[in-house]
Image: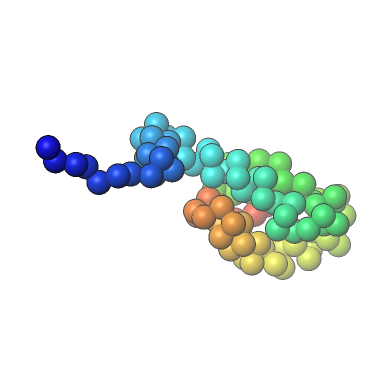
Length: 96
């Protein structure tokens, strides 16, 4: 009798999510949940991640000066979010 190579449950779950088209929504949810950790507790009080649509993260910012600072660091934030999630979930951030 021939034995199959053992597969980790984690790999099976990710394969199933990918097959069912649920991997991207799961990663988007992770990106939204990671926002406060990435920007820190002080900034997350004034800049709240709202949604992801068409690979863009929409963030509501209550202070205009903070909005300008976040715009300047947008590329770094995108990189850190994708690194945290482990996938290229977003390509841009829209601050409004």
